[in-house]
Image (cartoon, rainbow, N blue to C red):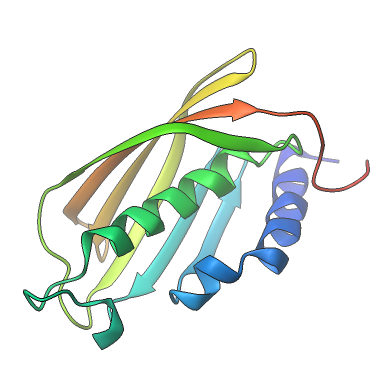
Length: 141
């Protein structure tokens, strides 16, 4: 099995049970070993009292992309800690794209950077996630 096939099978297993990401309107667009791309369109239910996308929604989008990236090797992984910096607001009807990329995987600990953009270019947020590998897999190999 290639790393890409393994990542796809992990993503399929995770996505089938990911009610949270689905309920927020997220889509899993791409998956690879140590990498994931998720997106969403900002809808009225995502807006806060300022009329912009709630920061928690943007965080959740980045966190979901991070989760798929760090679970791409068929070893269950969870977040140890995450941080986010908001750079620009998401507005109604914006298409937000979160690209998660593995920076480091050493032993049971990983570091992943996620860039959230409006469309393909304008940065909305940057997120860094630290993962911890657990025992267990997403599917039998």
